[in-house]
Length: 388
Image (cartoon, rainbow, N blue to C red; front, top):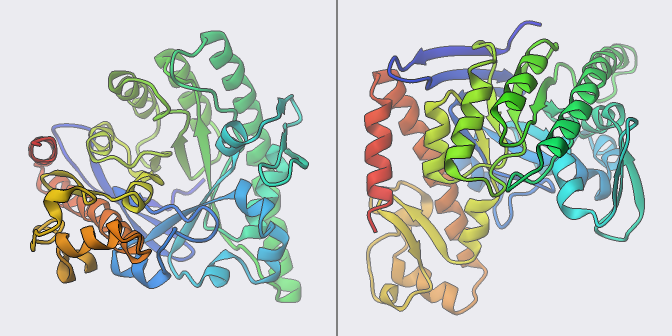
């Protein structure tokens, strides 16, 4: 399978690299942070906010969109890009983690996973094949395979092995379903002019919990399948930083270099930089906007809890080094006032800043990799961020 990913530069002192991932909706420069539009919306933000922040790719979720508004409605509306008025790329998570984390009932067998909707308790079945079909109805640019997720904090190796075995078999079925679905969609586009996904990309999800030998096995298996990229799943779920780093390295050391690696659900600066050092290219997380709505901002000198009284009279921006809309226009004092007054505008302004902070961090990381100075850049960023 031809890779749509081009490596532009590598840092000789580590595994960090920069590249471009080409999708139907444009180029995605890596390393990249992808804001999370779970239900076709990044909470509190508009498409214009995201464009101004420099977002090139968003992450949405098959589980949530399947339940509401339904993937059939998205297909009827011309696909998710038209529906939410977003011109950039969109990656859809298969929903395996949400089935694990949100459903009160979950039954896994060879066919797939039966689960209950967290909205109304209704039962549904996800299989490797129908998840691919749902993603085609959504119309996203990057599809991911259905997987089995387990908790990464003190897991049983037996459970991790069982989850990995099923994930591997499901991946083989998903790859066949992808090839069939894309071929059918292309024929449909030629014959009746209806909406078609065209050449969406397929990413496989690598499991194995915190066990390096299982991670290596999973990586080698996924590398043997016809995919365009790889997802590191089942991490950032309670494991230690050392366990995370070892698991990441066990994966990246056993994947082909010419395809992108995506760490699912990671969005904290220190951990992202450590993963980039180990060869990861893509990230997403709800954490930056979630904590922003709760008054916390990431800055170049550490976290700022804008609700604290010390900020009530500070005229400086959240981060004087930041170029986001919020920092260009508003003071900490004003943001503190908005939050304390329960004004919803504070959600938007804090979220804009946190999204831009991480996107800008990725821009700076790409520059450092190109210059061959990534490790010193990483150490300085972490030193300043943890200074408080």
